[in-house]
Image (cartoon, rainbow, N blue to C red):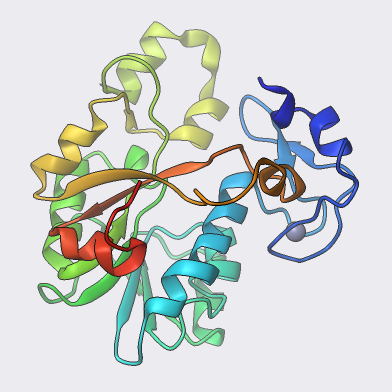
Length: 259
Ligand SMILES: [Zn+2]
């Protein structure tokens, strides 16, 4: 862990704040399995959630127009409350799908979005109808993930952008069952927090390509100075995985030459 990621690093900058709730943060809290520092004590946003919120607010949302459409597959409670349900994509129309109906899905309607109970592997939408599709940290829970990726590719417009960010560890992809046998010490809480179908490795990008999408791992805030990441409680030089059917999708949101 670098100095920037430690609590001492955050404390060096007393003006740290959470970009989601916009409140000052004296000390970010531990979260996750295994625990790491970074959750906002006020709104509960984790570092990746704060990064996604800022990315959508500053880069994705402003490039959308009335009539554009955004889909999220398997929204987290945070996204339902603050991202897809937080009006950040306006004036685009938003819809979220999940195979389960959960309490946070109901709040989407109140925020002007729409929730449809459906499987990620059989999306009830026409071909090439979405400008943005988010599917973050969802695929490790989807056994037929190749079908989910193929559905994302099918529903994405030619100049649309998908975000298929997910944790990728060392080694090659294996099933969660195989990983459980290799690492009985992890316990069920680890699989509940990280995925109960797949544990992805670096070859996850091949799965994305296999669905007809071109992956691109981009730095989210390439022009920001180092202290920006510390004062916003973000991991330094945070990157995320995007995918598009055609280079026009990346160009539309990231310009001519993404990093
Ligand atoms: Zn907050």
